[in-house]
Image 1: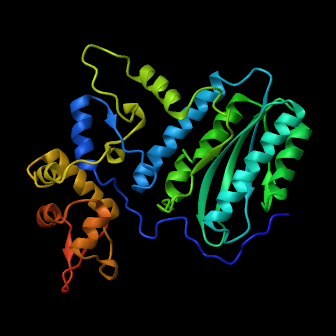
Image 2 (image 1 turned 90 degrees about the horizontal axis):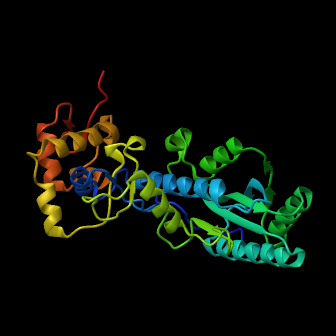
Length: 329
């Protein structure tokens, strides 16, 4: 049994996550110019971007399972847990050893065993575990025994690997694994930290000769067939499955940032920014925030936000110049 460190207190999530992508204003403009939703999908940028990243993972995994799996395999879902307070290095080492162990079993039995792990950050005391997807040509009893015992043998605490027997069950499991569900959007509030751990790990041939990006490109070609006026390819998703409050894209220069930020006369941008304020600004005086703190939380430059609070109905300011916005009755 691998020695296990259970005394460290490494953090896996950001203590003060951004609610809105830092470049939401630019992406709103680009979305309207190009005719489809431009999104950031950086899982460490903001909670909205994290949800968009999870949605992309969900689409890509569904495409793989529906079109490209070998015909003679069975599919499984599962959960892999580590001991409380496992460090980032513990996670990296144990998952790496687990993938190697399954590869060894695959070669020993001359059979397919392909796995995909998605990190699920739960906060303390359990920190983070993995939601598992597996497909294999081995008999069910043997595969489940191998998958669970291999996890324990490399230092894991607990593993469950039930079979998925129907297409509907597979779709539900993929959406749960990626947290691309309505329930997840409400409770999944731990934004991954930027300390370098992987949010997904998978075996070498899991994608069956494809990749996340190649499958994503395949899906985008179906959603947005090429035309004479097709705009440059970007990270996008179907309009019917998105909201403008979820959009964003890559970074842009400070000069462009300033131009976007101070165009307060642009009603479209102002309306979106005000909707963010109503959703995410403090609701009571005891939780009121300074203009700088509110600017950081909402990803709205302070100069623009100062003008915005002056023209937005319902914004209150305390005697020590902190802002809050009570919920509308």
